[in-house]
Image 1 (cartoon, helix red, strand yellow):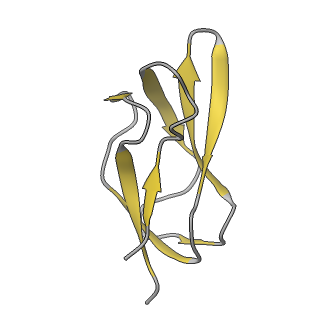
Image 2: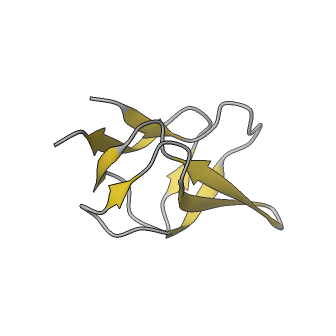
Length: 75
């Protein structure tokens, strides 16, 4: 099952500001699904595959580069 990760290119721990989709929503590959705040900047996190999102980290969590915040089910 593909996962959705915070980009490893982000150099610092950030806060998962908000989800742009609901848990269970159908998403397309490359679609923005969440926003992570690092300092004053918001960075979009995109889906790695098409399918239904299973959110694993709630908004407000601190997230590190590379951490998994959701999975994508191709159901």
